[in-house]
Length: 237
Ligand code: C5P
Image 1 (cartoon, rainbow, N blue to C red):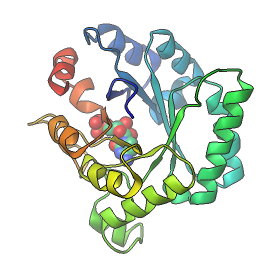
Image 2 (image 1 turned 135 degrees about the vertical axis):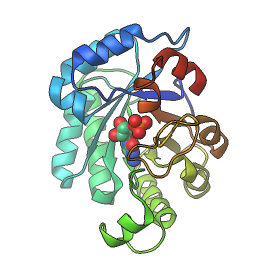
Image 3 (image 1 turned 180 degrees about the vertical axis):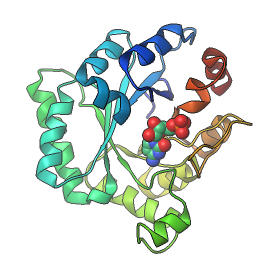
Image 4 (image 1 turned 30 degrees about the vertical axis):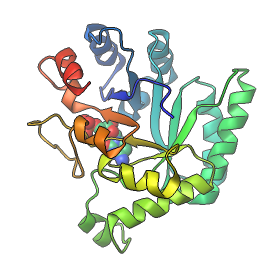
């Protein structure tokens, strides 16, 4: 079910100057990687940064992880659909009704914007890759194993009509098992061998992520903070 380049570079930069400067200096050969715009960049630059990145020919995953009451999330999705992004997301912790409202909002917004073709992908965050077993049990107060919570959230996301989930590469295989081979697994928590984990906990190398069946790898600091980002991109590839 992969229709795009399967590496997504997380553009976690404070502003447009840094983000666009990074892209302008990045040599990815004939590849046009997917680019992930998250909260930091979006909150500082707004929709203009999405338009600028799209203008440069990149596919955009707008990673704003919506989580609110169904009505609010549905209406917000209508707005995001109008930006012409390729992928959006919500937190599965918001529940099935919230996720259904998100899909409806996205579809309505997509139609209203006059765009043709299929609406953007919509996926759900299961458990953040910075969350480990102890944090999930003792602070988020979900009992049991992380893998079980991730599997249950993936089933809910599928039931609500979403296209896939964000998960650790370590869980990609299991998710394809419970939700089907076509259900997308988008996996942050990727590190080149030898790189620091930072705040991430459930991490693998790009090679292992591929072997576990990850559909899209979200890679931030291993590329953006490398001495030579173009070379790091080639190593990931
Ligand atoms: O720098 P690094 O490769 O750790 O970046 C991972 C990116 O993926 C960040 O932008 C982070 O917000 C995002 N992400 C994540 N875990 C999730 C969902 C998104 O790390 N479950």
